[in-house]
Image 1 (tube, rainbow, N blue to C red):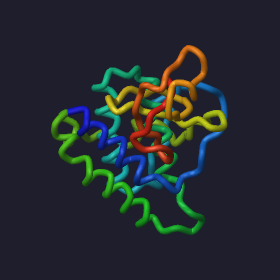
Image 2 (cartoon, rainbow, N blue to C red; image 1 turned 180 degrees about the vertical axis):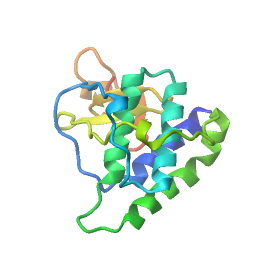
Image 3 (cartoon, rainbow, N blue to C red; image 1 turned 90 degrees about the vertical axis):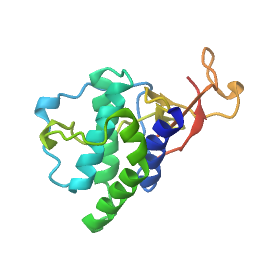
Image 4 (cartoon, rainbow, N blue to C red; image 1 turned 135 degrees about the vertical axis):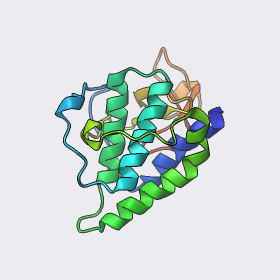
Length: 179
């Protein structure tokens, strides 16, 4: 099942490859107030559905609600970002591709028919990681936060190792990172 769950993150990251790179504090997981969220009026229905399914998967993986909100806010920011003047259809197509590729994984974990009030989704808020780091979600669904990617443990800061595999919305896909 790990391979299927990894495909959720893999497809989200693949659908979002053209997004801007984040930049800011290390391991920052800001708290997001869900009830203060602005409804995702700018997102097509397919994106809202995909984000609610992603919400389900991350919660079932055992993440704290604040971590789920940060990961969803980052994914939402990636989906909402598009080239100036770019059509909404491009965003909808990216979300539909991500959903189509994750259908079996979402069914396997019971998140394929999840529907949430769109106003319950956290606001778009791209996590800003320090230079040379990405906001990683491990292939097991755990929100890891900002970390450097690596080839060996020698690439990692003292006290961490190059033993985790994950993907980052708009960044590396199924890549080793320091944790």
